[in-house]
Length: 194
Length: 131
Image: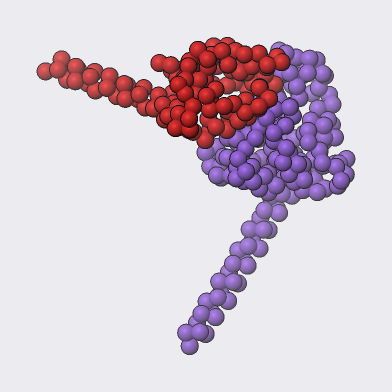
């Protein structure tokens, strides 16, 4: 008798669980679809989840803290998992710097980056073949297309900016994951509105 | 009576600030003691300063941290501001041993091309934690 009850309980839990999972999955896909507009207006660029500051998960906090101590913590979704894997495996020569981490922290951050990385066939990976392992976000065709109208002299040739890697020099809300064109102010040149 | 209250408050505040100051230096002391326990020392602030300014093929600690560690620095490549390194200017320094080790490892390898010895770390911490 008690066996039967246990069985009922297990079945009930399973059913309820599947229903909830399906529901959440449905919601998240819906959300992704609404974000995945592939036009040029940048209204729904990278949005970190969750959006409110101070409500980051522990993994997000760790990523921001460890990687953000030297540079803007770049949005994980701009590179595929294989790229993050290669990058995290060569931190002793990280674009010319030594950015070594303990093995444990390295594994945790790689897990975060992989979980949030660019999926195949997303717009960020357009023009990147499956065998490519891009390391520089600034060399992605997606990135170049987004910045093709910005003259070199305003960025690389601008001592107040230095290079295209320094997103937050011009994207004033980059730290919040917002890269909307309307938030751009180029030091020494002013607002960017084309 | 009012005067007395005022004096008592001032004394309490003074004691608190002394306590806070000594607490912020306690981290550096503990880290120095740990290095000593490993066989290094005695440490020299002058040697720490010399290492800080030592040029290694165009690189030095000062490249990013500045020659005066009580002032903010700036990452040479990314331009990211770096908080002052002295405990006096930044009480948070040397309060987290793992963080200290992480940065010594990275920065010594990058700047000197090798890891720093316990003696060198002790000298630098001694220099940066002068009152």
